[in-house]
Length: 112
Length: 114
Image (cartoon, rainbow over all chains, first blue to last red; front, side):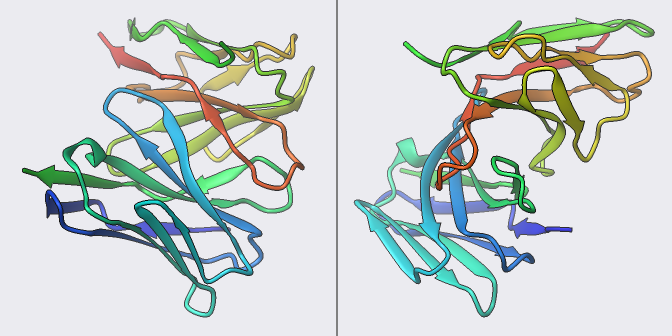
């Protein structure tokens, strides 16, 4: 079945760029997603990329997709303390709409 | 405001007890999901329902049960057969088949064992 892998922790200084990486196994996914979870809360959709795109930029967020290597990354420019959260990569599962497989989540810590 | 409401925020279970977690949505979404979150393990799918009166097991359904009698509601029961129930439980909903599958999540229920 589908497997999605992320590193667990990332620590950066305020103002630096953060890069969160994700690898996945199923190449048939149409959209790939990044969700953000703040402490003690549910997840919120942060951004997504269609599988026929290599890059998508949305303000401070840049998503890069390497389909050959099945590698997805999320870059946050000018990282702020308010960006401290857990970031999840998610990939659709099979052909049943709405089911997502989530990575383990990367906890981003931003130090002032 | 539209959204998903989970209750209670915190729940404690005694040995041998069944407990029920509530999930209600007013987004008119067809599909609803229950995920379990453990530190360092991401989210794992327990059960999902794509239509009223129908639901399917996810990856870790053993020790859990659900019902979907109304479109708005998808309660999860953690039974005494679930030997390690301590976790953060998240409910989500969406309407599938519309391109981008945007899941809306509740704020979660933290279940602990006394």
